[in-house]
Length: 203
Ligand code: HEM
Ligand code: HEM
Image (cartoon, rainbow, N blue to C red; front, side, top):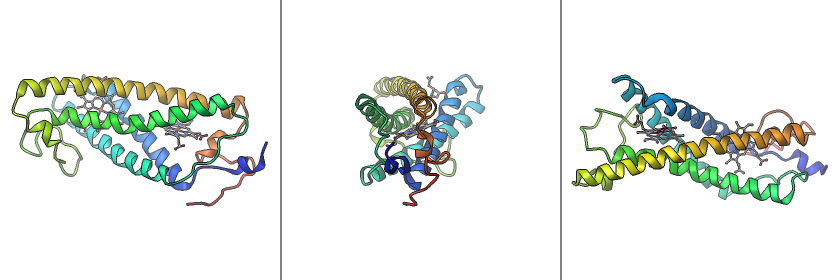
């Protein structure tokens, strides 16, 4: 195997972004899967936590994408076939797309609810209640807002479950490279050592 490639790993910034966002997404999928069945007032409180974590994911994902387009990632392992590299690129691009659109759809669900005095009902961000998307919330036609609400709820639901499925495939692919192809794949994302046990020390 090419020694140079074996040493390559993502930079510390990319690794921190990857794991913080991954933990938040897994947390949100977990609580999203049961929060609708909770009794009030617990449900409102749990949806507020979900929305707050989700908005944080959106902010981090935007920063991460900005960071990603201005930095070169390490080359894929030489052991990967060309089709595997193409599929990996496509899957990563789709993950980035969903990291932005799923929280945006969630934010749009709450924005198309009837306006309430700030600080009552579901709060977005625990410390403050960030304003809703006004073009949705200020629309005077309640019937139209309901249609939008249901549309965003469906989109959010579908997007979140596609995201969950893609994450499962993503983890399976990483484990396949790690254990079947015997390439130190996880080390690229900061878990364990590269073949040389080295770090490139980039920021
Ligand atoms: C919600 C969960 C996750 C999301 C959204 C996610 C997303 C991503 C994205 C977008 C990349 C591409 C990085 C880039 O080139 O810009 C990536 C890379 C990677 N992820 Fe994840 N990830 C998640 C969870 C995990 C988990 C649990 C593992 C552990 C098995 C993992 C292992 C990796 C590895 C090893 C890479 C490097 C791939 C390579 O370039 O060789 N990820 N992840
Ligand atoms: C990546 C981030 C997010 C993920 C993975 C996620 C995931 C989920 C999941 C799995 C559900 C349950 C869907 C169903 O089965 O019907 C859900 C529901 C919901 N999410 Fe998210 N969500 C995220 C971000 C957000 C954000 C940013 C907001 C709002 C600001 C939000 C608001 C909601 C609302 C209002 C519901 C419906 C709750 C109810 O009716 O009880 N989500 N989300």
